[in-house]
Length: 214
Image 1 (spheres, rainbow, N blue to C red):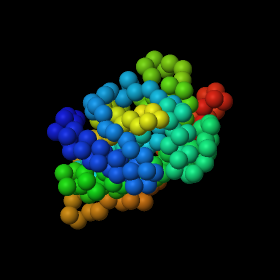
Image 2: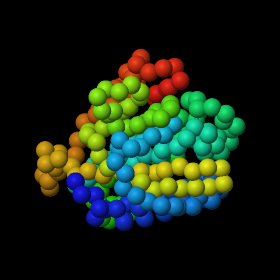
Image 3: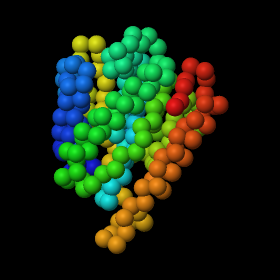
């Protein structure tokens, strides 16, 4: 899928929503920097907080990519605690942050992408995480996407660090298309999301103790 036609609107929606969330909820002044399209196999980070979205025309993911220290500071600020390591509180906090950013972006994106539905956030943490399957079965933690897709990435910075917010849009397959006589089965989508979280949890037995999954 050529995502270039969607890039400008997605970048604007993410910029506006992210700045709004951090200024109104956390009193943090974040600045939007460069935006680019990046292949997901080239994305590496310490923590990914993500959620899926589904609509009549488009589906995909919205995610925050952060280093551990930045995630601790952002989640700690939101929760009013001093977070020194990535624990359940930090992961819960980052899940809520991506949920708020996605909620604000959703309202701005629906004018061009149609009605969208957001699913439950999921968070993974470790070292040099990637969301794409490594070629040749290389070791390390990865979460397999539908395929290796491109992300529209926007970097944000503030006085304590930086983070990236990405959107990975795809056209809904024809078999999923909703016509006027058929509405999207949200129960099925929720079940798919639960299955994804189960798969993520199963990776716990294949990674070192320095990684954790929720």
